[in-house]
Length: 217
Ligand code: DX5
Ligand code: ZN
Image (cartoon, rainbow, N blue to C red; front, side, top):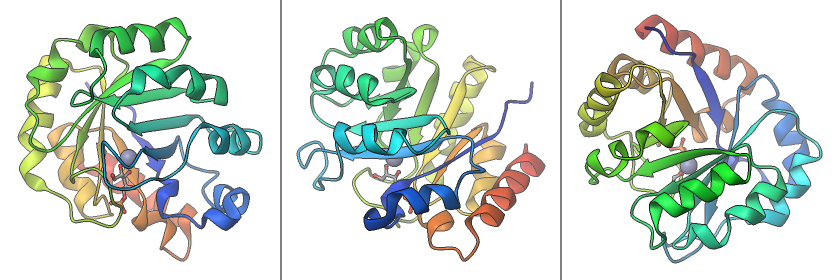
């Protein structure tokens, strides 16, 4: 079956001094990808729940919040209250994965689970029935602007075989060319930071990404 294609621009690549106008540039996107980094799970520190709450007030597009933090269970409530719609965290974190998924569900939000490039799919497959989405990282988490790792594609193919309906997201190095490879493998939700925000016309880039993903499906 064909899965709905969604483009989720990552505001990590946007101008944090002008978040409201940056969000207006991508108002045609399906989701807004918010990268949260704690300086512990990954080397960088980005933004937290107060910023999410502020930008939620000026944006109607659903928020896809990617927690790259060591203890997500301690923070999912803050992000739920701040307006996250999808809350994604990593299987490699220190929190109990199932309890964290259950907490996100009890908060009325959509749970998603992410795996780094070297993490096997078994770590997400056992929770698949409870998840709204799986995120297969196509770079090592922590930085924008890295190169797409094609070596992660067999994991997407394998998850898609197990579940034809679940949303499979890819994150890292997605551009109008690499999106075709990920779409062909079975991904249907595409994060793009640099490709969207560093382009002259983000709305046009979003449309091109969507077209290339659809053509490759
Ligand atoms: C990486 C982040 C990504 C990043 C993607 O740790 O999770 O969401 O912003 O950036 P690009 O699209 O530039 O690779
Ligand atoms: Zn991300």
